[in-house]
Image (tube, rainbow, N blue to C red; front, side, top):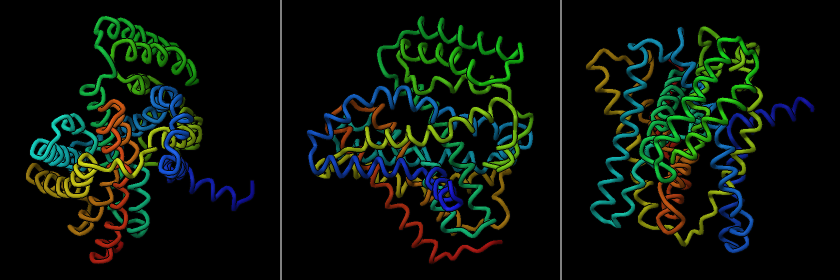
Length: 377
């Protein structure tokens, strides 16, 4: 592959542009010929949402886990309190706005989708932040930290509040215990490849969640911390990680590209919504994201200062507002929450469209940044 081709592929993969491509194709196809789109997309959701997305959430878990290791930005309570508080605010306030709108204006069945506007799409939000802020600006790592914390809380919400079927605690407990015991055994015997963790404990964990009534896309979340890993965190997306020989980093390097194609199929399988299905759920999701995210991040970041939290040096109020608007892009995880919250029907279509249209946060962030004029501190 030429240097130009390599750089182009890197841009596509780093910014999840395959996901965007799959989404655009799905939306256009669904609005031209919905019946043929449904015929092609109908077989995909199980294999994409329940199987392929296992590895998307595993890579998100890896970033969360490594951030808590020594040297990581979430290892020190003093360093972690501000991004954690911002993440909590960026989830709580949108959820409150969404529930308030659905309760006041109805229909009441939309309330179940309260978690949809809690999400932040880390890839697209970071892409917008990098386009807005100069290299070296503290807003970029702060947004990445906020999004990682958001991912961690989102995984908990998905596991607790959105079971995929009838709960079967016995099946969950037995199979998950077997998965954890096997993961511990592999770790203690010094297994230095990630495949046994995926095919052994990972498969058992998937079965535990699937037969226990929970979403199986979270199957590798409890397994990732058992993979042998580096004793310290090098930093968010540090290029030196590519030279790390531990199984956890090799797992990320192996799956990073396949996951982009999983996201391509995810966008295609889930984003095919006709524009005619824009409705109340669309507006509630958009209002909660575009207003609730930046408001929650601002309020809770300020509250964190009361308990000793500090924003990174050089991060100003205007920067915080800009990154709060960039974080309003829910997209991937919002779409996933929508599919977990609602069966096929009007509510699902409307809230999916809200997740898709959250991309309007990008030009809004650019407008605010133009006014605030972020500079390298």
